[in-house]
Length: 171
Image 1 (cartoon, rainbow, N blue to C red):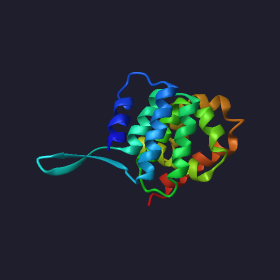
Image 2: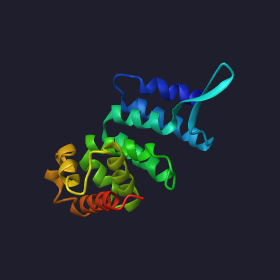
Image 3: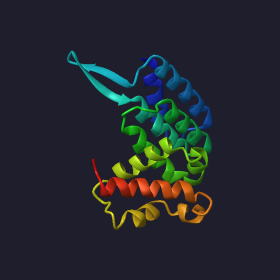
Image 4: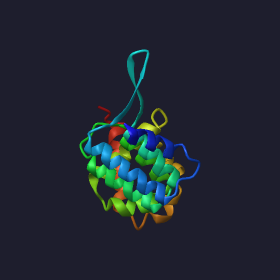
């Protein structure tokens, strides 16, 4: 689909403007409407996945690195609620590292969003986390959160609890 090609082009830019982000959001919504999640290519008669909708949009949001990008990614997460796609959480945690205060503000203690964030943290740092070091690592990876902790205590404590529970009781 042409929308995937256009998203790919935007995602490969060195810097992405808010105008590019707006175009990407419109492309994303068209792909969602058409229920297209993977960019499929063909080689020697075989189909393969070139990229995914979530990956491309997440890369665009990361490169945009603005409050608008955070807002649009969170809106996308809300629309994708219930999806088993792991890429959603992976990218959300990376966006959180860039803009922790705005992410926490926008999540408004929404447990579904905070669970996605916890899942992203667990998976992006898999193999490094233990029940003894997870808090220390969380604050080392997200040093800005120390400063804003009093304001977002409820959300941060929930995140840390979910991370601990998963480390303690992996399924």
